[in-house]
Image (cartoon, rainbow, N blue to C red; front, side, top):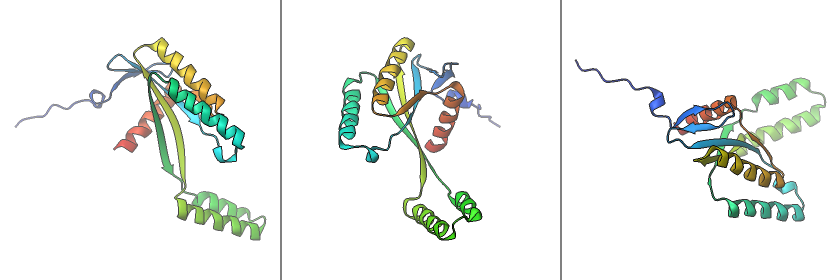
Length: 167
């Protein structure tokens, strides 16, 4: 009887470790950083603001001379719990009925989903990675986005979510 060697899942993962700063050290000795980006509602902006935002994004992409990846994780939302809570409050029956009808139609038509946006930056040098992070963050802040570097714990959660999506 012949036995197959059982390999560790870590052999298949491309990262070596997650540093306390949230930076990921890759097996090829490069470094990766994940930024969470909270989007703006572009449609609510004035025409002048829209032009300014587009120019800032344009500037960002023209000046990028490093590896960058935009990662969007979508999770379909179940609005049933929220709908039941609204129904149970029943403060204004007519308004409640209209709102519940709206939520039901929203769920049917658009398959409501929660989207989380991340930017992944990769570099061979840790100091260069930090510099690229600050350049990207500054430009995104000018666009009105809220940007934060993920902590070690949050990096683990994002990687776990990403791996589930990729399966």
